[in-house]
Image 1 (tube, rainbow, N blue to C red):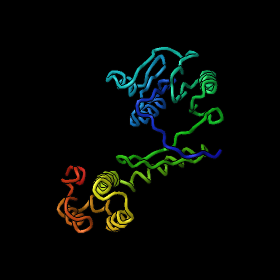
Image 2: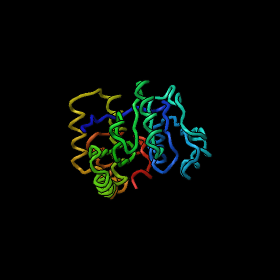
Image 3: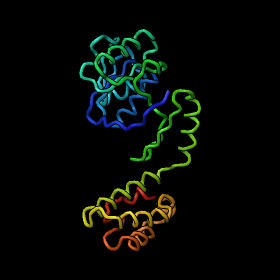
Image 4: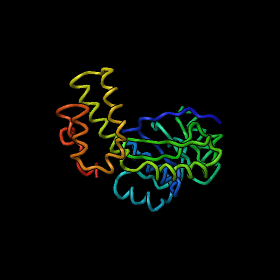
Length: 224
């Protein structure tokens, strides 16, 4: 099965998870990281979900799934461990035109969730088309070790520089040359291994005055 890769904007959108186990908890954490409003429908909750419920970060309907539970939902997950319930969720989602992920039943799903590595706003997604979750997990572990916190910090810095350049100089081809010059210095490694003063010197050489870490709003803790 071939998938079309896409990043969904879920901030403030209602999502539903049918099921309250460990798999549901993993799905929930990803949705919350994306800013989604999550409702979990299950008689019992995994300890992680219980904690999120106590913190008020999710809504919980303490009962089994009922037809109509997807009303107003943008995205749905079925992770009950009961094939008949999962199928009923898939059928309601299809009727309502809602994207649904049916755990362990890709043939009923309209989207799949990849294994991911997050470093700030940097998101690396891995998909094997459902053929080998074990390989996806292995690759995720390798990428987690390969791409540390410094890549998220580098993206934060690049975003701040881009915003300042666009504000002051507009979107020019010269901006691209400047970014390439900075990236040629292996920016993630610089952030990981060099003190802020050394980075400020490089930024000044490439971009000129006004581009220190402090002036760009980059806190020192993000570069140490």
